[in-house]
Length: 372
Image 1 (tube, rainbow, N blue to C red):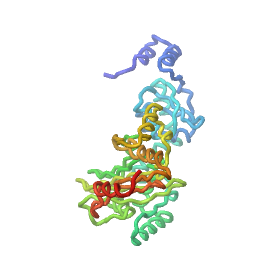
Image 2 (image 1 turned 45 degrees about the vertical axis):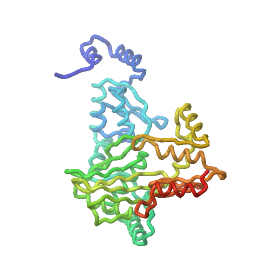
Image 3 (image 1 turned 180 degrees about the vertical axis):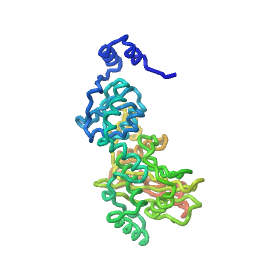
């Protein structure tokens, strides 16, 4: 049995006029109505939303206005669809209300002609590794003291600039796309049918792209070379790191591998090296919460616990607190595993369990370091 909305049914049976229904819906939703029969988006605007997503969310882009994308949707109150569209276009959106039949007809009319539907063609191209991120704009920097790793990094950078292999290009495009979306983590997950790239944005994991299974070992090996890890060892977890420079932004990438049923799973943590220098006000906490935190940090002694799920901002909050406390008259020593952001004027200790430098031993030594 086909389900229809009450408004559509009333309109279909001529029990209410279109103008009356549109006016009533505007009053209830507080979202302006637009007649999609007259919508004529240009190719650039239409290319922002792939056809598949437009059909799935029953949405049609109308125009770009004041750095916002104006979109007509059948259900503008559907927050999941709105969030998915916003994530895809990478910009703020301004919602309009449209009737389902008109929006679907507009999708067929606009995307069906072929010239603007390059966005729809771009989706399968991305599936096959044909990304759109400029690989030449990204630079890899070694953090290893080993000369062999630095030479390997230089070879990768030269290859990226002149004739990148598929593995180098795909890794570069995925990192560039993750940085563009302000992702905190980039996952490379092997599956039975291929390799899935996913990114965590605002605490939620989202699919980024898929690659064929034949690319799995090449992608993993390339990332392990960048992070100065043993590419021959695939039986145990490994950790590594490297730096990425994209434009004026420098990001530290912490890499972790884990053997799974279908191969090594790779997770890259993307750390903005400038995030640790944020002020408390820049965290945009509620005023009451920020005031309470400042009061706690102003105490001469005590313990503050910061908890939360992955990507919720625990490290950023702690580093902002350290930035708030640091001054020439205070001796601050931290014990971290690992040191994520470097703060000038603070003594940061990186835990090394193999060498016996544990949290417990560090705490004992700190007591003899005149902490204040």
